[in-house]
Each structure stands twice: as C-alpha cells, then as structure tokens.
Amino acid sequence: MEQRKPLFIANWKMNKLAQEVGAFVPKFNELTNIFSSKCEMVLAPVSVYLPKLVELTASTPIQVAAQNCGASKSGAFTGEVSPVMLKELGVHWVILGHSERRHVFKEDDALVNARLKAALEEGLIPVFCVGEKLEERKSGETFSVIERQLKGLKDISENNLKGLTIAYEPVWAIGTGENATPAQAQEVHAFIRQWLAKNISSTFANRTRILYGGSVKADNSAQLMAMGDVDGLLVGGASLDPLSFGDIVKRGLNS
Image 1: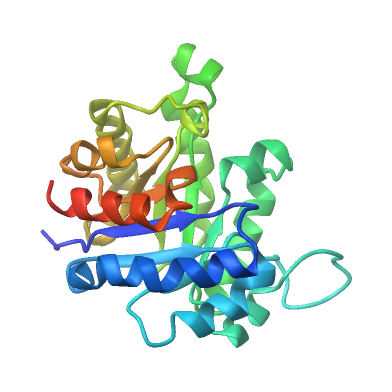
Image 2: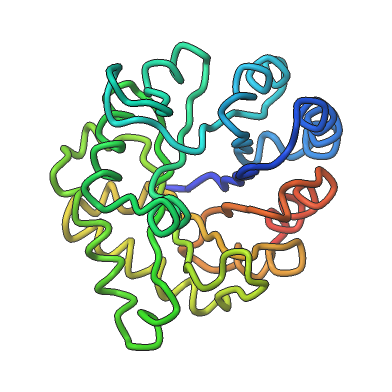
C-alpha cells in the first residue's frame, strides 16, 4: 500500500489582516520546521493576502492555498478569482466545495464540480470538501450525501485527477465545538476510499489523501490521525494561532 504523507491545512476563512499574516509565518515556521520532512503544511488566507503569503513562505517548507477559485479562466464574473490568476501568483493549492461555500453561499454540486475541473486544468491541487448536515446524519443519509457530492469525480479522467485531496468535514462539526469521534471520521473516510476504489481505481484510492475537518484541536489531532484512513487535518479556528496550529501538527504526527 502506498504511504500517504500527512497533510495539515489551515483555513483562515475571513480572518487576519496583513500584519497578522506577516506575524504568523515566522513563528509557525520556527515551531514546525523540524517536522517539514514528515508532512506537508498549507496555509489558506483570504484571497487579498495570497501574494503576501506566497512571498513570506518562499524560503520555507510552508505552502499556500486559495479558499476558492472561479470556474472560468476569465470573463464577466464579478468577485471571482480564476485558477489562471492563482497559478500566476504562485499558489499551488485551492480549497473547493467547503461547507460554507455550499450552504452559506449556495454553491451546488454542479458549480463546485465546474470549479474543480477549472482548477485541475491549470494544474492546481484541489482540496475537495464533502460532508453532511446534522439532519442528514440523524436521518441516516450520511453516505448517500457523500456519494452524491463525490459523483462528479467520475466525469474526470484518473490522470487529470492526479494530486486531488479530499476533505471530509461534517457540517454539524464546523465551528460548533462538536467534532466527529475518531471512529465516526474513520467510518466515513473508509467509505470515501472504497468509493474511489470502485469508481476510479484502487491505485488512485490508495494514494489519495483524505483529510478530516470539523472542530479540530490539539486535544483531538492525535486520535484522529491515528485512524487508518485519516491522512491529515483541515483546521479552521484552531489554525489562527501559530502555537495552536503548530501543536496540532506536532501531536498529529506523533499519533
């Protein structure tokens, strides 16, 4: 079985001004540089600070992600940032289909899939988010929701999907203080991997990293990372502080 390198992503959402972005990088790099050969670490700032963060991380092992991207190379799409522009900035990663994009901004599966195809076409590494709402979990629909969200991957060739990362983020656990237990996370991650094996290929399934996101903290990172199909963490609020996010990485790697 292919060894999957642990991946830790900080999704800062709509937080941090320029000075805070500047202060974060040297501190976080100092804390985590020792782990850089064992994992990959990615920071996702607000889009206006992407150029600044690319510059600040240039001589470090830290990589940079956008929090979303447009579905077209250019055009009359007010407020969108195209994957071509992200690539030009030196951004290599992009988060797509985050639950806030799906449920707060009403991005449906078709739009998320269009964004995914556009990102892949430009050689960006997408972090493709899936997850169910509380009422869907309570009514036993978790797997059918995840399957519906993954379905669009079947329209893309395996070769074009190279580098894809998937993040399972139960909507009921985001920003609520509630998190899926390690066993609940493992159950869904295993389902996702089985789906990938059945619908794309077993080779693809074995090498694809599946992250967990949803009220991740230093206190639960090791238990989550100890699960066989949890390959990394997509961290929200706890990633805003370099000490906190550094501790999540450290404990996660020692799981």
